[in-house]
Length: 137
Image (cartoon, rainbow, N blue to C red):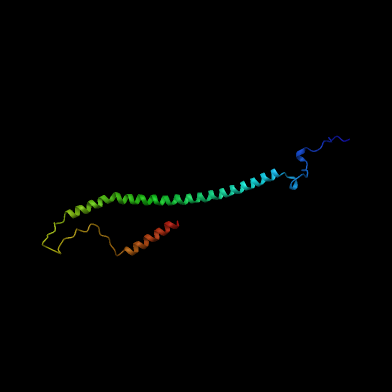
């Protein structure tokens, strides 16, 4: 005899015996593998849906940032509106009272703000160009 032991292989190293079931696998094991495959598919679907929700949340964040900027601009306009109305009231108070005997000679209030209109198309084109650059950037 040689110096090597003559023991058999441990049970986990033996080839599975061909018993009932396909390829020697028990029906419980096959069911568990199928269950794990279904669970894996569900997890992959959950991952994809989570990625879609994350991208929608990022888009929402950008839209809310834009909305916040617009809200601040509107708040500034409203804050100044009181001053505008007060200036109009002051200018109107300086007008002479209308004479009921004179029909078409009612004086109009003095012009408070003069806006040049000859440059309006060029300014509008410039503003639209800047808005397009901001949207694409």
